[in-house]
Image (tube, rainbow, N blue to C red; front, side):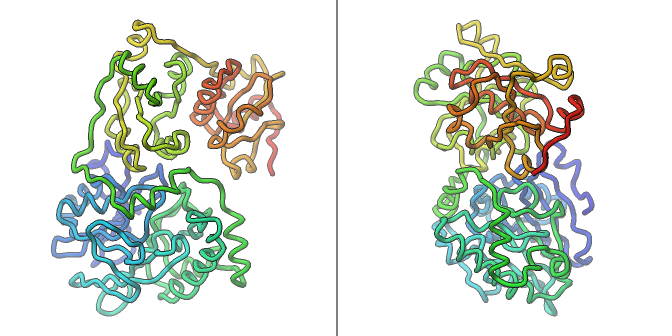
Length: 480
């Protein structure tokens, strides 16, 4: 992909790139949210009109791309009821765009319901609706065709690059049937398209909706026919087994966002800002059930923080871990920030997964908190040099990464507890002093804050991952 709008979105977490191989008469832009591992697709339809497929809640990156192309977004299309983000189609509709979505999804906000076999006339182009259930029951793909042939397919959460999407996000009782439906969708529908048709999936590397895959954001039917390992399955039963064997855990908010997207999310128009909260107000909110979330870098949190707060460093993956560690979206959230915090990005990520009870941010920082009599906490922060000097004798490493990461290489003797399940397993951890470990330190710090809230004071955070540990200790990692 080639850069299209770099400077225009320099302060935005999304990346946007023009897909270079679809022909001079078709301009498609990949607008990628690396934090969720998803890509929305903006298509220049000509006549100063544009289509966006599977937009996220914040419409600003799509509008920026459309402005750069000299077009206006006139149509948005959702391939399915998303489980990992709040659809942005209602925000675009409020600004005048039409919306199409699968009639089987029973969407209850203004849109045009489509069924397999329908075609939307876009002037030079047609958007043909293809039934592709599996990732979800109502899932459709959109084939973009000109007068002569299909040119591209927006496959949403069906066929991905080197993979398919997961099929276990509805109900355990439905998973086998959905996986079999996906086999038929991919083998008999999508693989029926010509080899040169470009495939533009929504889910990709880094998405909890994806079953494995690689880091490319788009592909072709022919490329997937030749190289997708799941399409090499000799029969339906083998495909089902291979897909299900790759599935890991996912955040609990995945089980409620489908309903949000069916009923219709609140339309903001302009996203809210975070009001300042004095320490007394923060204490009042905590007494009413609010959670204090420290979004500063790990080193700042380790040096000093509001006692009992949860640290989730603001980074592209922030929303996934917020939704995992604070499972109730009705929980009021108070944030601890610093002068470098991108507050607009913080709000965007919260709203993107349906967290709208944003009470505000602590004013005056930690100094103001302490001056008002607020309790402070700290946690030991170990880097490779500390490890080399002090060693790890008598301390237990708790590895909070996902199963696949742990299997790929972990410190000998490390106890594996995924971060998402740490709270429920906290009482069963070893009584020895603990060293929390992940890939870089952010998830380890979140884990340390979870354990600190239970009263443990013998927890340290390792800055770095297993590779850094092995480089200092000289002890090879264990691979499963």
